[in-house]
Image: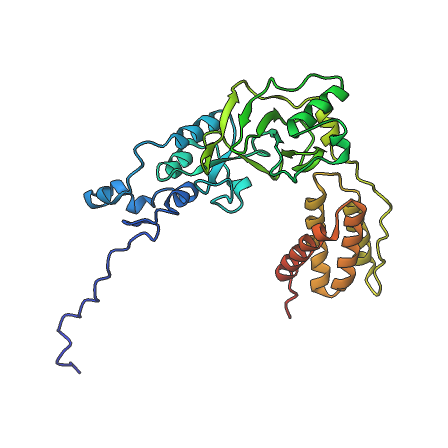
Length: 352
């Protein structure tokens, strides 16, 4: 049977508007555009600014003169990883996870600082630096503790002089040095090999902090308020003096025998796995403790998923092992929870 409308042409579906890359904007937000460029690039290849006249016209214009861009690029050539900081401030960083996103890539740096006069941060850990921050009192009531007052120390500079004299060493002035906006100084040193130094506050003495792994410093050229950070000594950073390293070196981890709970009502294989993995965690060397803990939790998670080990017993055993390795519960519990959740989700027993 032939329908009267069978020879009619089928209607065309309505045409879809041309896709526009969600990262492309003709009117970018001036406060965040530079950071977006730093993290992602300008646009996707399909909608690059140079793909047509209209898009070329819409490409955001760069500042005519941005000395902070030159500073960021110069620091990157030294191998120092940089990231953008809020203009006119020394915090906060404009990107999350700044220590891992800090870069020496000149293209990423140009993309960011072409758009705005962001202050420049140097991630000290990835840059292989230890920076000694010498500060001055903030007010008349900011006075030295008795230990330093008795030696007539008035600020962090004096304290460092006294520490050098006590070690029978000269003041470490022959290194890259920056004057801070608060009239202090940053002394840049090369981090020692094989030792992961962390930030410290007052560990060396009154009005002396350090920035290393986990920290950053505001780079020269950056401006906060009416003052700027500027280079005082442009010599390459010297190795961290041994007498400072000895004061900053992490204390040895006090390892005691880990009291690992015994698994109850578990198969011999599962109980042995619990003992072995917990012992691996307890004996993990510094620098591998967290990775060993995560690996152990993922390995034991499959026994929790199969019902061979109760989750509570696994968590208690791993916490005991982590404690034996020198990790606090604040450090170990999030890693254990996350790794067990992942393992259980990927090892769910399926019904036959």
